Length: 334
Image 1 (cartoon, one colour):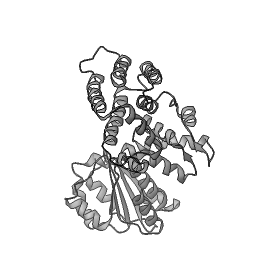
Image 2 (cartoon, helix red, strand yellow):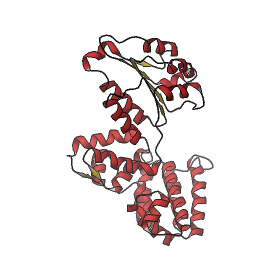
Image 3 (cartoon, one colour):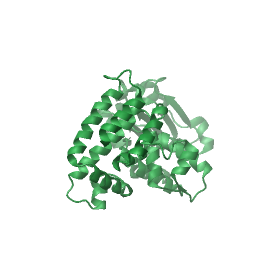
Image 4 (cartoon, helix red, strand yellow):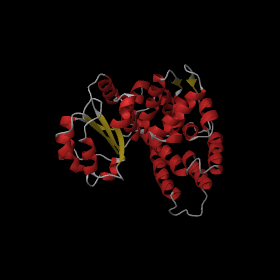
């Protein structure tokens, strides 16, 4: 995020490069930077003649170069944006000769999503000298809740950790999807509000009581009644609560619990740092560690591996997801 802020600051101050090559697995920041350049580099009256958008599936590298070499009309510069440039992955290296000597009055923006160019080759080296190569890396799951908090903070909102975790567990690590939901909340909820699980449930449709976050907590506390209630709900709503996600999250929890058992320092700050979790959730691991000794945790991890395979249809084709989850719960909590 700091790199994105610096890019924006440079553009605002007039330090504009002739090429911006935006690549990587996380599309959110690629879109944000590209949109910012489209919106802010040219004045509104200059855009008609001097700003164009090309799509990788419709053009060749020669087409891109030809457009980039044009001179602006009644403006200091022109902007050429190439979207879905990953469709040109087989020929993208041909852009190297232009990148080595780019048109100084053109701002060429290349959106190369879900892939990245080879940093050992000529194209990367050329752009690195004359322009900007920005790699948008996918966040790890344990980083997304903090990203939600920081994003909302910039919009004058706060969010309780459980609400942020609900979003992560329901939407995964796709920042674009999460941002869309956050924008919906901002239309409904006034600035200065602390977003709670109730807000998430009422406006996004994620249950605050029947979700993987609550299941993990119930399993850790060995709250059999609550855990079975959640599993029954999952069994009745399999499309919204796929078994593969539940098993993956439980596997991650018990893997972290195994790590917890191996720590010498069990102070909250040390545990949060070692497990890469919000300090708010440390007590869950403390409680679960009392209920699941290291030997039991190892057995649970083996069981979760077994049910991950079954949940994908291997050796359990005719067994409903709800029944598999109930069997899994019994094996974990007994």
